[in-house]
Image (cartoon, rainbow, N blue to C red; front, top):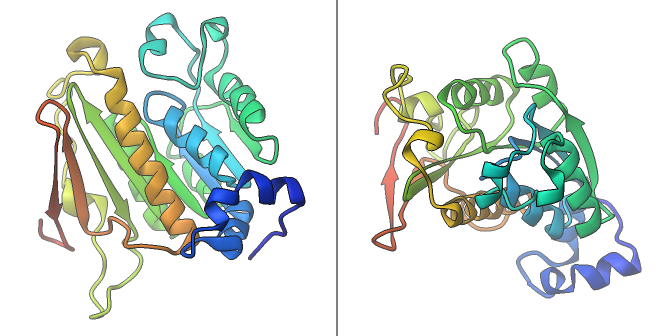
Length: 252
């Protein structure tokens, strides 16, 4: 599916269009794409801004939280004047100012087992920027059931990770691609991993990981490059080092 670009869009996306790997056809794919972002917080903020700037035609946002003062150290899609507003509304206003060609679909609710699949099936791709294991596992299981690609990321204090999941597909050898549960078989027990409110987090770290998630989403929509399927990209901010762990179905 493609969507024609008007003259203002051609001018806006000129730096994409001159890239042979994207070009006009790739930009049309971005315009036609429907991408859902789970969470409008630390990870969701850069994901939403870069996907909107890139020209993704429809962005869905799931979040049931309100903007608070402590969010502003890292959730850069929101501003001081947004404190007390629903994050979905604040993010939608910022996106409208950034790129009026993008349609925002607000889902001002919490992702739950009874609503997740119906929402996911409305989109071509899901990016998970949630901050808790319950939502991460739910998003991964739901994306697998709905046969929708998932870009999932996580952060903690000074480190983060990103991977891409398409477990409903097979590789060139006919082997099933890995799922989130192949990488993380079980959820950690409650309290084993402290929340960022307890452990702290560097705001810029969420920008690094969220931007990597946005890049993977753009690759998936346009069909360029090699997505992080079967690879977990790790970032250590204090050491300024990236590393990669390969994993496969049933085995890391």
